[in-house]
Image (cartoon, rainbow, N blue to C red; front, side, top):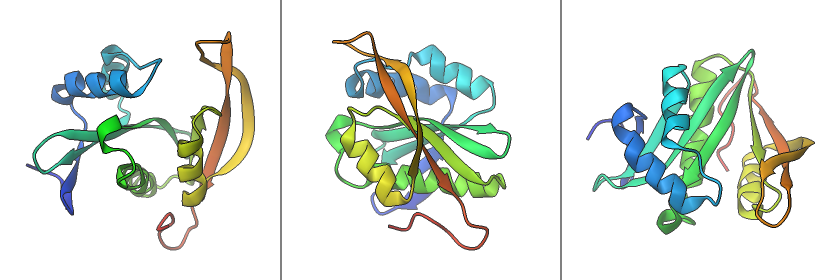
Length: 164
């Protein structure tokens, strides 16, 4: 086990060896999942990937971050369905902010489906604010496309944010 130990969970950088497991959790969690190739391309392009694991080694969740000019774009944050409602999403958000600060970027931006109110609530409680809506951004089952809510967290120059 390597990485940062937090209670009975630890964070590690995502690597190629994690991708089969990451893709499996992605398929369990999302109706329209990223492919293994999407994750592989992200790592090959130098994006930040983070895995959150239980001390047993079981993958609990992960996130993928892409630096864009002066801010970080949170491309994917996923918690395994069996591990939801236990603070894993919050831990991953805190790590995303830590990485953003370490990269000396000014904030974090993300898109979220309006049909995912639990995620929206987590982001709002963390300090993200809605900045706009992207029409027909996501694929959807019962309609042609679903909008995306675009949210941003501006990081202050002094001290950590997102301790909620």
